Image 1: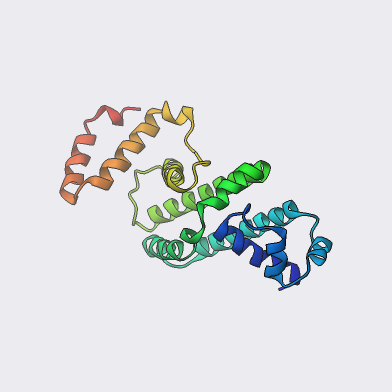
Image 2: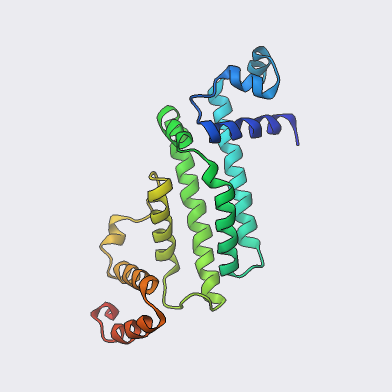
Length: 208
């Protein structure tokens, strides 16, 4: 690992834990064990450091997603493993990091938000398709809808900058049916699902 990559990983760890604003250039120099003069020889300014830190975070997210997608585990096993990792890593990220990024580096915040949306959508969509193919998810669900819904609901709690659901989606009969089925199937017992499936065969929701 080259020296710059080691530096950025150390700084990113501090940003994620304490936010960006509270970490000064003096703090960064001390963390890296170099003088402030040397720090400015290596990096133009704090914006340069924040930019490189965001790129490093993107790289980590991409590699983690690829590892998740390429895993030979079935989708249920994958999701349990993912939740375990989420608890160990992502929950340690303080909200101040996102807040500071949005307030003081709005361009980076917007580009990072777009990156997350695209990465999450592609990964979630593939996850749903794999689950259907493995026979572990229902065949009548729409991977596009489930991906949009899952991302938006999750983001509402942790990343309010992300919203995959458009006005066109909200006005769509197909989208509403998918939401309805997703919601009720999550609440119903096996007996309830049998009742739901029988009623859905006669429901107007099945009309195109």
